[in-house]
Amino acid sequence: MSDLESRLDQIVPEPQFSPRANRGPLMISMKNVSKRYVANKAALENINVEVAAGEFVFIVGHSGSGKSTFIRMLLREVQPSSGQIIVAGHDLSRLKNSKVPYLRRNIGCVFQDFKLLPNKTAFENVAFALQVIGKSKHVINTQVPEVLRLVGLEGKIHNYPHELSGGEQQRVSVARAFVNRPPLLLCDEPTGNLDPQTSLGIMKLLERINRTGTTTLIATHDQEMVNYMRQRVIALDEGQLVRDQDRGVYGNVD
Amino acid sequence: MSINLGYFISEAAISFKRNWVMTFGGIATIFLSLLLMGSALLMNSLVNDMVGDIEGRVIIQVWIHDDAEYVDIESLQAILEGHGNVAGVELIGKDEALERFTYMMQDSPQIVEQLRDNPLPRSLEVELVDTQEIDGVVSLIKGSDEILRIADSPDDLDRSVTYGQGIVETLLGATQTARYAGIALVGILALVSLIFINNTIRLAIYARRNELSIMRLVGASNGFIRAPFILEGILQALVGALLAILVLLAVKSFMFPGLQETLAFITFNFTNALMTEIALILLGSGVVIGTLGAIIAMRRYLKI
Image (spheres, rainbow over the protein chains, first blue to last red):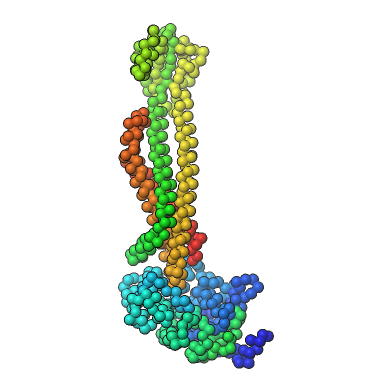
C-alpha cells in the first residue's frame, strides 16, 4: 500500500458510496470502465459511477489521475477499452460515429483555455455554436443575448475575446456551452487559468446553471473551490476511483 | 437550409482568400490539365472528321491496258454496277486522264510539255456505298475473267486495281497513338491537380483547426463540417475549368480561321454543339477532380 493510500485511509476510513435510489433518472452511468492508452498502464481502471440528472459533481485528482480521460470518454472523444458508458440515454459503445454530433448537442463543454475564436465577438462566438447545428437566425438573435445576460456580460456582447478579461472570456465560454440548454454540462479545469476571486464567480455561475436542472460535472484540482462548494466529490488517483462522497471536500489527494 | 448555403459559400470564399497561393496552384494545375483534355477532345473530333472525309473519298481505280477490248471493259462495268456496294462506275478515257494530269501539274507545266504522246492509261473509277466493305468489291474485280484481259499489268493485279490500300489504316493507327499519349498526359496532370487540391484543402483544414474543434464539440454534424471543404475543392476546380473553356473558345475563334487558310485540305468544323459538349465534359471532370481531392484530404486530415 502506497504512502498516499495509507494517508487517504486515515482521513476517509472507507469510501462513502451513498444510496442514490431516490435521485431520479440517470444522466451518466459508467460500468466497469477501463481505458488503456498503452498496454500495461491503465489511464482509468474499473470505474463505476452513476450521476443522476440535476447533480453537481466535482471530479478531483492531480495531473495524470485520469480526470481528462474521464471527461473525454463522456464526450466520446475517447472510447473505453472495456466497460459500458451511458450518457443522456446514449450507449456510447454502440453509438455510430455519424450520431456522435447529436450526443454532443446534449453536452455543453467548458475548458481551461476557453477555446474562443479570436476573430469573433462574444456574441458571434456564442452564435457560432447555434449556427453550426443549423439553428435559424431568429433563434440565434433571441437566445444569444439572453444567455450572455445570464452570465453577466450584457454590456460586452460585441467585444472581441482579447478585449475581455480571463474571467469574462470564461463566461463567454460558459454561455456558449449553455446556449443550447444541454441537459449535461462538462467542465475541464474551468478555473485553471483564473485567480481565486474570479474562479469563485465562475463557480457560482456554474452552480446557478446547475440549479436550472442542468447536470454539471467539473474536473478540477482547485482545492479551495471544492471545499467551499460542498458538493459531491469523485476522487481519482492513478486511474482508480478512490472516493465518491456527497457534500465532500477535496481531501489530501494532491 | 438557406442560411446554411450562405454560410458554406462564405466559408469557402474566406478560405479561398486565406490560402490564395495554394489555391492559385490548384487552379493552375486543374486549368492546365483541363486545357489539355479539351485540346485532345478538339483534336480527336478533328481527326475523326478527317478520317471520315478521307474514307468518303476512297474509290477503286482499275487501270486498263491500251489494247484492251471495249466489250470487255463494258462487261466488267456491267458486273460492277450489279453489285450492291457499288454506287457508280465511270470510264475515264486517255484524254480526260491527261487533262487531270495537266491540272495536277499546273505548277510545273514543263513536265507535261515533255510528254510526246499520251502515256496515261484509261481507267475505271468505282465509287462505293460503304468504304468499310471495300474488300468484297476488290475481290470481285480481281476474280473476274475480264480483268485478266483488260488489266494494265495482268501479272500483278495489285498494281492494276488500286484503292489507297492502307492509307486509312495508317492514319487511324497514328491518331490512335496520339490519343493514348494524350490520355496518359491528361491522366498525369489530373493526378497532379488532385495532389494540389488535396494540399490546399489540408492547409484550409489546418488554418481552421480551432473552429473545427469547437464545431465538433458543440455537435455540428459531419456533413456540416465537411461541406465547406468540398465546396472549396469544387470551387477551385470550376474556376480552373472555366479558364480552360475560355482559352479553348479563344483559340477556336482567333486561331483556327487563320489556320484554315493555310491548311485548306483539312476542314475545321467546330460546331457550337461540339464546343458545348467539350465545355460540359471539362466542367464535369473539374467537379470530379475537385470533389475527389477534397474528399481525400478530409479522409487524411479531418478526423471527425
